Amino acid sequence: MNKLHIIATLIQFINFLFSVYYIMIVVRVFMTWIPNIDWEREPSRTLRALVDPYLFIFRRFIPAVGGIDFSPVIALILLPFIQTLVVSLLSMFRPVL
Image (cartoon, rainbow, N blue to C red; front, side, top):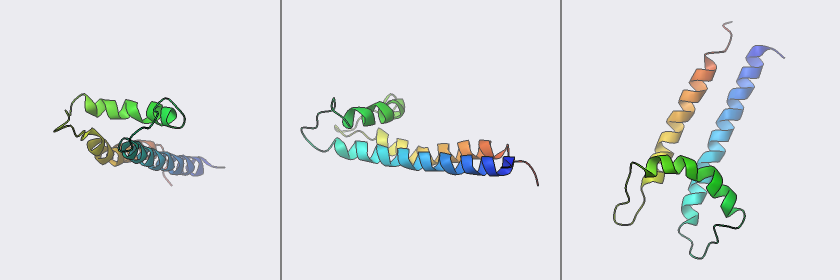
């Protein structure tokens, strides 16, 4: 397996992980709309453990307006830009043909 194929496969895998993470954030947001969710039971606890650290970055800077938290919206908007940055940086290691 050559280096080009390894990097291309790695880029595909990273794109897949970002897509899954995006979906996890959306699911986390929708779960907040459901009353009586026990956040200490699985799978809610794992979802919070994986998604909340990223969302807390934005919650520190974006206050809730009228009781509505807009930080997940900004987090979802910025995630594809972060994905592009990561993939672009990784693409720099592709060998020139």
